[in-house]
Length: 408
Picture 1 (cartoon, rainbow, N blue to C red):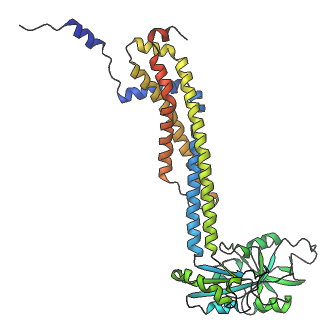
Picture 2: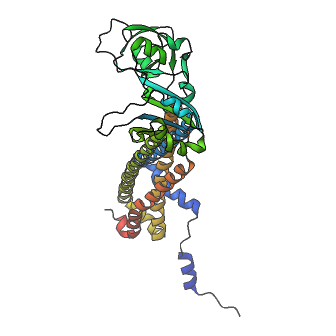
């Protein structure tokens, strides 16, 4: 004879609440987002701004790094420069006239070229410009091998040849040409109280920015027409990549054996690397600012969820009266908070990636958006959303059905 089931067990079984599936949880959690679109948009905007800032800063930094590496690869890191140092009384110690020739005798040195500052020579667009309006353009005497040594490229025209280096001919750096309003070769400028013909205009020189704002004339022409003393003020050298440090150690003694301490040797690519390091430090600062904006957005999410709990007490009470557990109520509001933050995170990641790509293209850089920034950005927003919505969710779950239905 079979036993009849205990009615109490049947009642308990019928009163046991069903567990919400993941799909049901998402659907219930999205109700609050769909019914309050304006508030959701404004709350998500705070999160989006923080994420967009962080993604854009990291992506722009990565694009800048890629452009920097490409720049170094094109100009090389094996260039060294020699400049006058100070003597024992602190006065400038001039380099010997044959400094470039002595540097070329060092076996690993591939190329060497010198420039010399022509003092008191001013550059003007024409002879009617006031003397005070020289625009700071320096005049440098130079040898014919300077482009090969420094890695210079012509934006227009040609470099000086053997004949032009003895006559009033000049090549302008890119900044000097802009200041003088010259865009094509063939123009004449008033240089050192006489006319010089422009034969070419240089592109920017990343490793020798001092050439950008200079007017370059032949070494012999500088002596003949402008009274140049023939002493170099800068010697550029190109060395085998594996021998750079060795050559750097003997350059000063080679240029001035009697007083090597009066010679300064530097590596221009080190200055570029230091500049890049400074840019990266600035990037870290901006990322920190973006993180603060993200936290502010998280506070906005928490505020939105608290208000949602207060406004939806009736809904909470009804669901509790129909059998929803505290855990289900808590899960509903926590899911809503995470979905709200994810909406802002995805929008911010897209906005930041688009903004960084636009900036990189405007600078003619390679567009680099590290995928990890997008993943970390969205993940961070969801984590902040979970933390921001935790207290409102717990508060909603603690509401008793009777108290919730009775209103605030």
